[in-house]
Length: 237
Ligand code: ATP
Image (cartoon, rainbow, N blue to C red; front, top):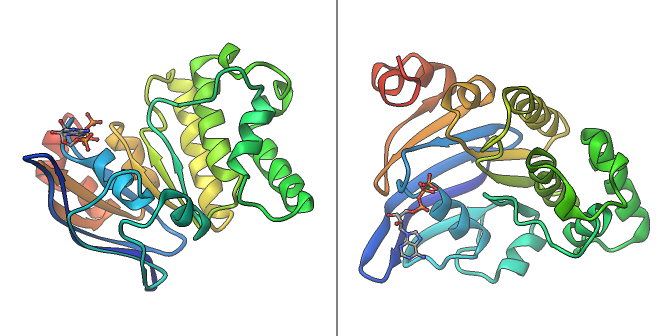
């Protein structure tokens, strides 16, 4: 199967702390891949190294066969890699629509911008209803959706989602996972970091377990769901 993204032996240091100790991941095109791991395992660091926000010390990050490691974040975004950050990071002082427009800054035409607005509004009708509202007045769940919507505005080939269900009510968690499925159905590859291991494994195709900067388990998501160590550590069984 064709991998849209291949990470090989990735090492990231924060000063004297080695946060990633040689991480390798294969992300097949059009699939959902989840990274599970406890707090501090290096999940966000992995995402940030891919999007270029964090520099890596060594290794390879191949996107469609080209090494993008340590390129500038804007250049990486231009390749079709988009990040939906942990903790929402919506822009204050701007409306919902203005926040979304910023997500589409790499688009070349107004027509494409309008098409992407339509797509995002059909995935998130609540954002359409509230498009002229100040983004800071959205509820936490709506802000989470805005962060996802903004990441989708560039019509990315792959979206990196860091804890999209964090802090949401059970009903909204269901909604977010349904939307992630829809994003995949639309042809976009998804790399997901999630604390909600059960839900994430249910929708994922592949899964990796990251422990203190190393991959300790990898495989088909259904297989990992039945793995005893995964059940014990991440599924609370
Ligand atoms: P969580 O689930 O808690 O968000 P995570 O798996 O995303 O955790 P990372 O945020 O990637 O973990 O952090 C990996 C390790 O690197 C942790 O030990 C963390 O303390 C450390 N770390 C992260 N960012 C920095 C930084 N800017 N400076 C120093 N150490 C950092």
